[in-house]
Amino acid sequence: EALQTAYFAEHDLIIAANRGPVTFFTDQAGKPDFRRGEGGLVTALTGLCRYADATWIASAQAEADAIFDHGTITLDENTRVRLRFLPFARDVYDAYYNVIANPLLWFLQHSMWDVPRAPIIDRATWTAWESGYVIANQKFAQAIVRQVQANARPTLVMVQDYQLYLTPGFIRKALKPRERPTVLHFVHIPWPGPEYWGILPPTMRTAILEGLCAADLLGFQTQQDAHNFMRTCKYHLPGRVGVRYNKGRLWYRNHTTHVRDFPISIDVDALRRKARTREVQRYRQELETLIGERQLILRVDRLEPSKNIVRGFLAFEELLEVYPEHLGKIKFVAVLVPSRLGVEEYQAYLDEVMAAVGRINARYGTSGWEPVRVLVGQNYPRAVAAMQLYDVLLVNSIADGMN
Image (tube, rainbow, N blue to C red; front, side, top):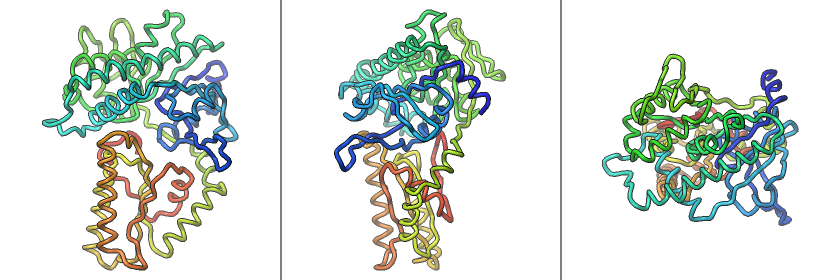
């Protein structure tokens, strides 16, 4: 904490991520309001903002974003952040996010493509790459450059995740060496080995690797992910690539990139404060009424295929079949946050999840007992309340960056 305080006493902070730290909505009086975002990325980074004069640059997700653009919001009593929202034409955002970032890159990095059949990279994919993903990354880089130039102090730029792989390269090209900020890029999801990256055409793959090699510091969740990135660069980048695996250092085109694993954490004190709020306690009382005297099996996940949610329900179904003494005595509550439902694969997975739950409840449920309850929605206080009550917490991801 002392180190962070000292560093940000002399430096400004820019966070660039596809989504902002809050979700906007309209309250009962018709006025715009916001709640804290649900994802692990937001959970990890908002704690850092308490120490810094921070600007968060994100894509505009709703009309309310424009109202808060360039405004400063208070996330808690110790954390304020300046917001900058980038508007995108609908077709550009759809190509950037729903065609390239998700599912193409996300499925690749979780090793989840059925490789003999998918992905199919056709003319539509290339159009989405050039007129969506590249354009969006250029727009993020331009906004970052403007903010760097507006800041009075040296700036640390923290670029986040797979949506913005090209952004560090565009920042580097836009500024002279003495003007360049320190750029950190953190990858929140797994990084597979070079063999799996062979799925992508060389033009896309090279652009991604060169964009990341323009960062000064690259962060990954695990040592294996960091090692896999360096192996991927050594195997796939054209020209001479210097790699020191034992030092976590990569040299490419006269630039050194430090590659490290930083297992991401949360702000424990902030979470404890949140857990004591009246809102969380109200949700806790509601959940206690729902559960009754039964024991609770809980899962808290984003609704996405890598979380392996369907198999978790199948395991619960088998438990009820093999150990019928538990019938009526336990309850499985799944707190699920909707994710990327504009992507066909995610919508199909949601349908599979709900079909599994419906079958279990129809097979084993009675007038006085519902075996599974699914709570879908962006509701962080409810998730915190549920985490206070479980007897068994189920985490069975296929591949995961943070869990």
